[in-house]
Image 1 (tube, rainbow, N blue to C red):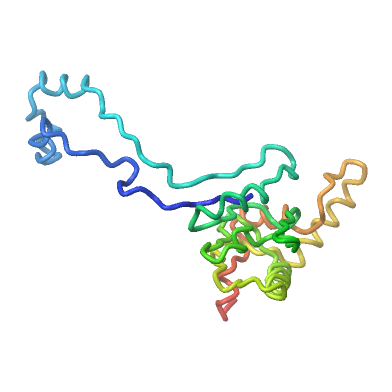
Image 2: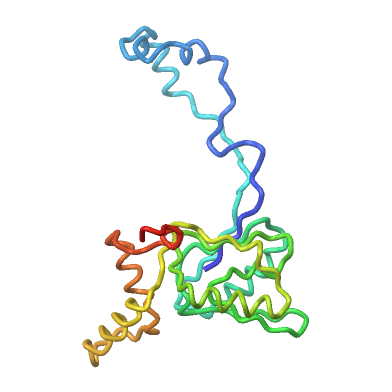
Length: 212
């Protein structure tokens, strides 16, 4: 899943212009307001007054697949990425991927967001992704061998890691279930998410901690 983030508007979402009619009330302390220093009829009129309608530019375009993959998310992201500044993958692992063809050259991506192919894009692997370091490094090497600059790639330090024992647990679990197996790709993605939910998994930033 890729999420494309464009530039935000000049005003923050939820920001309202000051209403002159309530300026005095807002300047009062919470103590004064709580103990009824504002007349009841004034409070009643404020409650009934409709809030001003605001139109805030949407700061992001989100691409979500609602089936089981192969919906063309990566290709769609690649098409709209030229209008964005960031392309963020926010969840999932390397059990799936997408192939993008540019000028007759094919790029098979599993972890790296497809925005990597645009020189003005900052591609981000977010903290909701589970990352197999071996797969990520191999993918970066593949892209750089094809002339793609990967120096712009950012990886969240809070993203959880897929380690060899996750893959072993995945294989053993599928074998134990027999005919009732889930049919996973045995790449350790489910067990890595289980560790994340249990708050016992290792994260990207842990690779930089010599004590760990």
